Length: 243
Length: 87
Image (cartoon, rainbow over all chains, first blue to last red; front, side, top):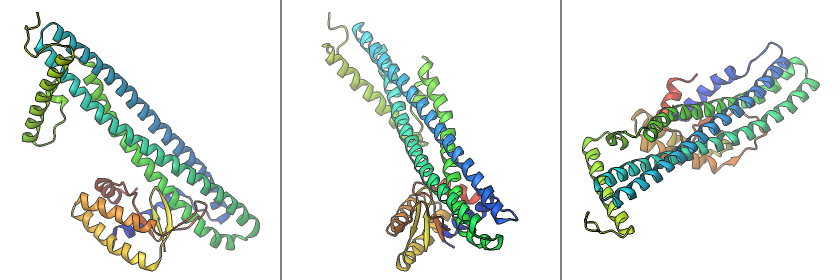
């Protein structure tokens, strides 16, 4: 059996979980409709959660950008005071913060995609619920219980599938915002704790050789940035030579 | 046949396309079993493209699907979770 057939099987079992069947098919229609309206509320809440998480990350990013500016300022002051050691330290922190900003940017984009996905699903579900409501009224008005049973079959399973789809999308969005929370807390402490460890600022690649090389690269890019900063400030790279 | 792409919508595909989809679908299951994330992603996109070549159903259609494809950005881990923990 292929993957898609398996997913279909899983979804068929979900349909009966998201929509209730009653003895009287016309009651089934009413129950189902109530569930759909609830589902629309769930999806609205889901969107609101994603938006809140996204805002939180954006605020965090603004704070990190302030910290970057602060470290840049520190580095300049240190150069003016001929303290290359301090300037290097400030620039390392600045680069570490910048790499966090890049990571945050990717996460913000990820959440923006989730938001767009859920909004799109919400609009489609709204249309479907409206179509179901119309069919429900027609079936209730025109058919006996036995006939209605047959008539609602397709609409029922079709819509159940849509609702299971929305449930899964909501679950995925929720998993993503959850996993971001832990990371966000770690970044907060990075931005707030002035004595943070530079070793922890570079994310581990899981490969110790790669990690060492990354550190080396980071330290040489700090030296480059320091040289650039000095040139910008009209100092040559030889400390103590500018008096 | 009606094929649904999760978090996207439903499409009506013809028999020939369906055959092609089914062949890739078996490979998709194999990639999942072999834990081959890169191949899984690639196949998922290929199948999605094939499905999209069919006729898109309007949102007001309430029809059951014959086959369901996970959202094209589903990761291998998410797919495993779907099978492992279907509730």
